[in-house]
Image (cartoon, rainbow, N blue to C red; front, side, top):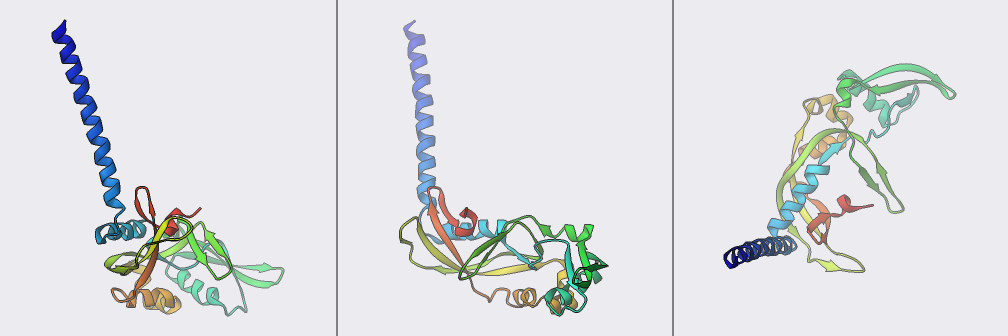
Length: 214
């Protein structure tokens, strides 16, 4: 009887010890992830780029109608997208006159990413639910970061890094690059353009501000 009781006690103590060690290990991992270190900030940038690291074309809502006499960006860009098969167009008549209406083809839908796109100006912040994207970014080098500061909220800082870019096959076509100069510059400035990313500290480590906005 005593032998069984002692065995049960030892088993219970062993289970308690293993659980305690697991909790301490998790706490230690969290504390390690909270340090403002190169390894932690590199992981933060990689996580951000894995979720939001795309170069997109600011084509948020479809269909897109372009007036016949228009000279705006859509008038220059949509025919190029139609030529390479990402959109299809049809002539329509609206209350304000003739226009051409463009919709995404099945091929174009492959590049229409349903991820939040945050656009900020001095006076407002707009979030679009999706966009047509042409390239994917990954981290080239983490160049540095500002000293973390706490001001009326979580501790935050900003990171500075350069990127590598992998354009879709169609995005490297000369007519596409000519129609979309922002995409062209992003490709030309691979490994040289410096990007700044705001991050803040959470109980589990550093997170890009954009990923934690509500």
